[in-house]
Amino acid sequence: NKLYCAPYNADSVLVIDGETERTSYISIPTNVDRRMKWMGITRLNDMLICAPSLSTFILMIDGKTDEIILRPCIDKGGVGIKKWSGIAQYGTKLFCSPALHPRILVLEDQTLQLSLNGMRKSTTQEGQIEYVRSIFLID
Image (cartoon, rainbow, N blue to C red; front, side):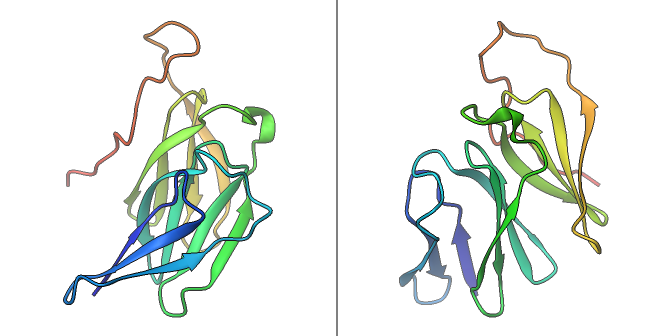
């Protein structure tokens, strides 16, 4: 019955109790960039995964214990840019939609293996975000 909100500029994950509407917070480590960190959150088994925006880490939250896990992102070449901004599950994989990064970030369910796949076609001027929180699965 808990809802989790990804911290974009916040220093913590916002947790909302769906029944009582009360809020609580899970602090994130202080060694993480302070602004525009993660954009988008989804569930993968008992984990909640946040798509990295400016952060060089993928934020993972254990849904049973509320433990925070920071997983280094495989592509640090995008430091200082809004890399991905949305995340959705398809089968056993998670897909992060590109903001300014040229590739789609893919996270495998069982191994939590990261890969960069699919070159997106740019349709706007360089440096402009093309997709914001814009990924959704229709079966």
